[in-house]
Image (cartoon, rainbow, N blue to C red; front, side, top):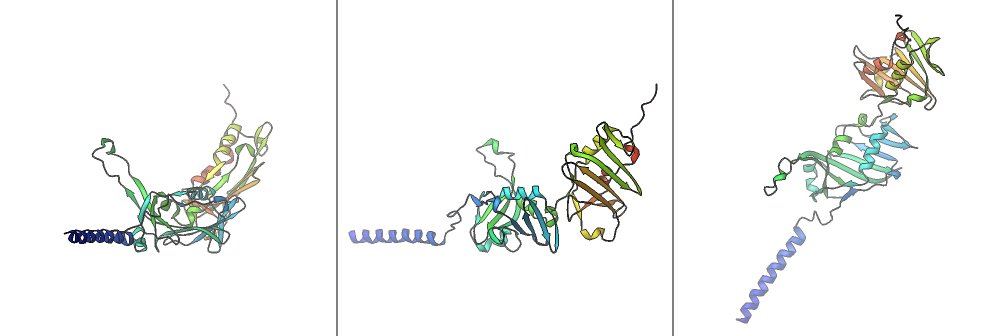
Amino acid sequence: MFSKLSNKTLVIVLLVLGVVFYFAVFSDHSNSSYKNELINLDTAGVTKIKIEAPDKAPFELTKNNNLWNLQLDNNQADADLNKIKALLTQMSPLKTIRVATNSQKDFDKYGVGDKALKINFLDGNKSLAVLYLGKVHYEVPEEDERNPYSKGTQGRLIGYARTDGDNLVYVVDGYMKISYGDGADSFKKKTLVDVDPETVSKVDFNSGGASYQLIKTDNGWKINNGAADSAVTTKYIKSISRLTGYHLFDNDTIRGISPVGSVTITTNSAGIIKIDAYPVDSVNFALVSNQNHGNVIKDKDHRLFDRLFKEKDYFVKKEAAKP
């Protein structure tokens, strides 16, 4: 009887060990090396960013002193500093939400394979981290019947991400893929004018063959040799001191076209800023600023043009009506 009991015990022990061995070898270890931070960059050491988006031309962002340039094919242009700063801030660190999978077989399922948005952060030619951003979807929270406050809880946009050489795919903030996956144009600078209006001392207008000049004096603003309406002039300068577009033309759009007008702003802090206007069609102008090298701003319905270019009479001081 003792022998039978011992045999039964031995069989049970062997079965338990077999189960433990199976799960140790074949079970999902996705949480065994879970990281709360997928990437944690020293952003000061990043001097180059290479971005490859699906169905978009690859491009590079290169740091030059405190400025960033965008390289697309053989063309260079000023990059949007605020957008690059936002990207780097999210990488220091990039927080994870949970693990989605630990299998390379699932890369295509989560969009982190060949169709991923690939972002390579470098110091010179040395790669610091390579991030793959995959599919994005809206996650609706499950309602908890035990918690009445769970009803109506807002969901969140999530995405999937991994780093180079790692099979672990993580759930992360989904807005990153949307923010940084639109190709080179989304990283190009779109500023036309960025100046402290108090430092503007002169504005030269040249449009339609006519030209005139606004000059700041100790007694207010003058237009050519006459008095300008200082209140109107001050309001105008403030309205163009932070002038930004939203869309771009290809640089070839203005090839062979002469500008129909220009506004030149002389400042005590930012030097001379010149904006040239090129007619593209009946509703659009192309605007080029020497504060934004390599980029051509698309001015739909000439809204920016109308803010920049004013007739001379707009600034002339009107005589007060006699009683």
